[in-house]
Image 1 (spheres, helix red, strand yellow):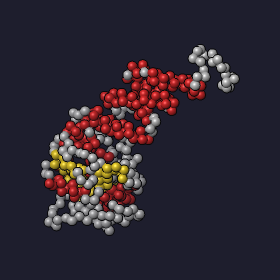
Image 2 (tube, rainbow, N blue to C red):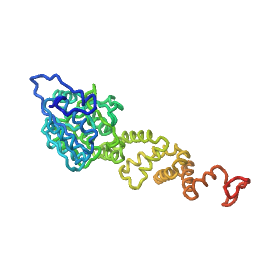
Image 3 (tube, rainbow, N blue to C red):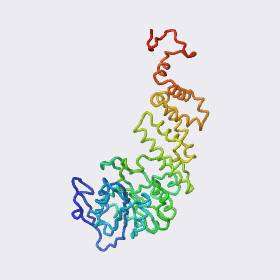
Image 4 (tube, rainbow, N blue to C red):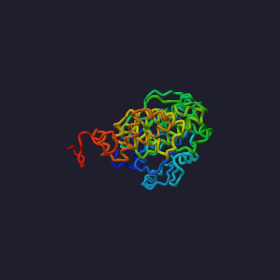
Length: 398
């Protein structure tokens, strides 16, 4: 593996893995098994070089690095070419998405232990040596994983995952909470990966969650509870960044497929999505979320999951009351119509009726006229009848 001096010099970056490198103290008579790291990438030139350096500078003595690029046109190929002398294999050609790229890399891998590192994530110093040492000490383990820190697009630490995690999560825990394994920290025994059949090519978001479930059925997991092993980057271009409904629906379906409770498995990512929406749009986020579910084009969430979250979303909508209707009357009305179709008894709620009526009147007469009506400047009688204080044709009180 290359030294820091042998790799292309950084332009202005500092720290790991640009100007800092790991020089591990390895036993001279130790035979280290081959490790294969696959990096799938597409249009990630802003982060790819940093990811590759974080692998190459691990100081692990028996490593192969495989880069599977999906035909990027953003400068990624030029980056890969600069690091080609230290890559076992690389390709830049159209593929069928991230899952397909990872599986292609796995099928080329020759290592006893394998893993994948997405092109916007990083390994931390010493991660591979710690993971390999652990797997060698636990011959019945099929997977080692650990904590990771979360960083933003600029590499600033956002949060840490050093919470309480079960060292040997039972299958029921995996089925109920898909987020207990931090993917960038994972190193797998290649024989176990072959046994369960690689990643499911039909999945686009939860392929790692599905893989953990299958692997747990054939062997043990080992958790490294001390220092984090990797950095997970939270950046807007990541396909899971906004927790799209398609991802949540896929998690539900995976849990159901393996005999678990899909609603329970989807509850955590749904909660994270609600939190993200609340941060960005604190006043109207329940309406925004319900509008997604109300959209006829939205088929991402299976019916049972939609029915499970609908009462919660409805409760949030009702809590917004008339204030929400003032801000987004048409949107709020659309959301409530969606809820009423599923729970007709909601029409008995005075707030629901008021929001629907206001949206209807706004659409028919315009917001200015409705504002005057709400201010009490029109009677509730037949059209044309005025208050005891008449108004002139311009709307001014005489």
